[in-house]
Every structure is written in structure tokens, then in C-alpha cells.
Amino acid sequence: MIDILALRKLVETGKPRVVVEAGGRVVDREDLPEVGSAALITGPLTDAVKAVEGGLVQESLDRDSLWSIEGFVLSGEVLMALDEGLTTAEELISAVTRAGFEWQLISSSSSSS
Image 1 (tube, helix red, strand yellow):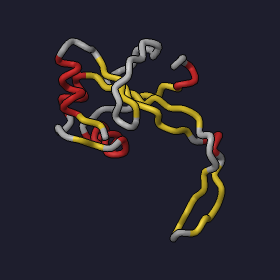
Image 2: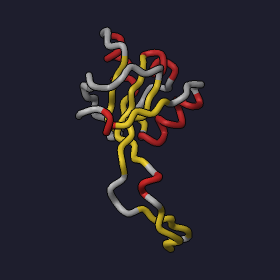
Image 3: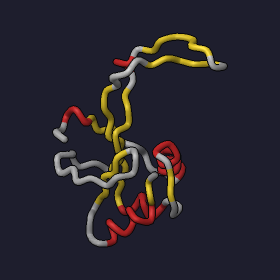
Image 4: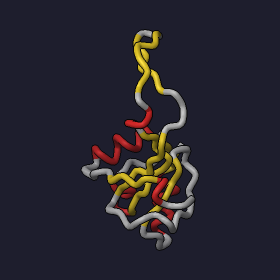
């Protein structure tokens, strides 16, 4: 879970942005490029991906045309616009968009971890 209030406290102490993994852990990532207010850190998919409908596999998907979300870069401006509390990665993506911010994409393969 991602704790919005805890992330706000980090930017209030002077951090210009917070980097958080999809599971909610805050990480230091000095290797990331400068971004706008909100960015998704993406990586390649390594597992097989299937489209499922009604509990049945409908087709295999090309994992080279998809990516996974490994984390988020969030500015204080974004964090202040969000509701306090715990959220999931999926809910965070929607909440940032509803708050009027656009997501940028950063490939994790273009920076070292």
C-alpha cells in the first residue's frame, strides 16, 4: 500500500520529489532523469501474458508491446492534490489523472537501479 500522508511529510522536509515502488516502499533513485509532476517508472514484462475473459484464456499477448509499472515519481504539488490515506498503485494512477496531472514515462532500463 502507498501512504499518501507519509509521502507528503517527506516533501515537506525538503525533498522536491518522492520515488516510491509500486508496493509502497520509498526509495532513493538519484539516477532518474528530471521529470514533471508525475512519472511512471516502467520496466519490461518477463512473464507470459494472457487475455482472460469469463475465467477462460482468450489469447496470448505480446509482452514486448507491454510494460510493467515498477514505481512512481511524485512531486509535492501532486501529493498535496491527492486525498490522504492508503492507496494501491492502480488507485494512485487514477487519482493523479483525476487531479489533473499527466503521467510521464521513465524506462527503468535506461537508468541503473
